[in-house]
Image (cartoon, rainbow, N blue to C red):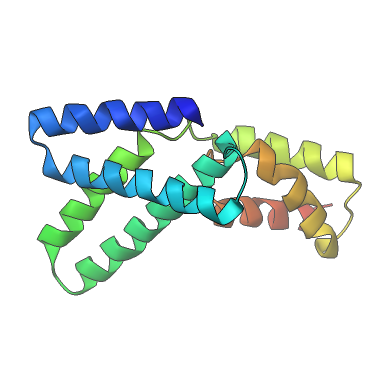
Length: 151
């Protein structure tokens, strides 16, 4: 987590120098969200996966805001949210391709011995650490559900 915090701090300085207000505000929000999670967890340090989960939540919030702003025809606000989302995504690891995700799901189903949909929780738990920050929960659960219905 120290590397992520340092990267955010460095980029905050760069954004201040470049007078990029949207980027600066987004980086400060990211730093604040990590601090809240740190206090909430009450532990020495957040893991990388926990940091990515925080960022994933921030991205999801931006996506929902974009939808709302576009429905209300507030395109300027939607563009601001898209810019913020791009900054946050710059900290996320490379997303998994559909084929990679499918392979991980099949492997996890075999390891856990899952046979039907009621075993979905076992598979999701096994996959969550492997896919942290590389795919969202909705996509993951859809893929697991699809694979389990084919077993």
